[in-house]
Image (cartoon, rainbow, N blue to C red; front, side, top):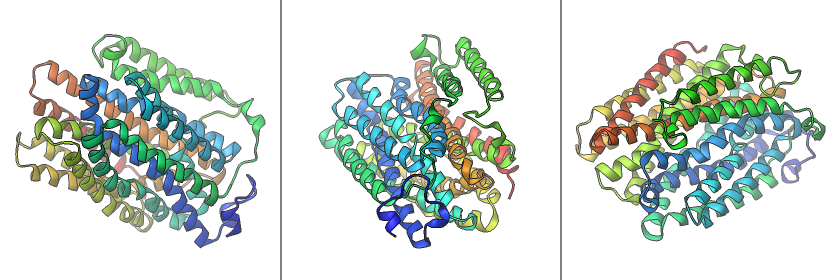
Length: 471
């Protein structure tokens, strides 16, 4: 227990050195940065209609309030994971939490939209380390037969927070303005920083600062350029003035960056992205599945508050209730999904979860306009139940065959794939709604276009991933 209270120097402890009860303490500590991250994300979703009205901006630009956070979040994930393997995962996690705090302060004090987006971007850089480093630490600490349950428990911090944060965010937005949502995040992140510093041991890493000099920064730049190019293509109207999804120059540049990245990485002695990680099919398939799952989750998370405000005239607190219901459904099945994955293997929970997501998106898309809200709530509940089942199973499938010394970069790449889907989901949803409204559609029809697209993508996930995933 002493090693947990006063963490050892980097590289001195391993997962086997930490007793079972102490592992649970570490697991709980690692849930605190996730709490602060989800607190921010959940309250920001509820605040989107208020931000749209406050800054008088179109829906596709509202999506950039989300994308300004998710883009650096996605780009820096594998960097944190890779550097964590060399420099120590705990050290990098604490650095990320400090950066997140800086971005939160900027968001709180932002005098205009540009400063708000800057604060969101800095938050995204900081939180990029939360998921891959926490996953790597947990996977290092827990044996394979307990890993699914541990990851499911850690993931439960998301929906638990998601049941509280939307209500709090709605009250703050309705009565004190959107800016005040940053205050509880600032408090929670400060507490999380103290808890992680005290309770999480330094498991691996050799303080190999010299590794920074020979680090594959070229790979980092090329991968970042690929991700930025893709999102700029999806939202090109705000970037180049060309209709979104139709600026073929940006798509061409994205493909060139991707090919250059693959060529570069194959010629590096110590590549930023070791492509051999994808040789076990489970890692690549789980990464694609997680990306599709987050695409649908992010799409509905972006559209839901705007849909409820424009179609049902709900205020921020009432919208928060809807998010609370969805988070409660997620929580109900999230830990169960991890337990089923440990017992049955990952394939069946993934198929079941993604099929339910696809079916409920289809159901919501087919609901008649202005039907009683209870029918919509039923769809949200069932969607949450399905989404919760597949999460820990995908985590387990992705990292189950990865050696411990490469766990950081593997978790970073997997997390990058997940949240790349999140970035594209929010951005594309904003573009589709904006284009629908520009064509003269009434709001409910414009939003139903998004629900239909999300349903199609989720069904593709079942076919491309679920049916091919190994047990």
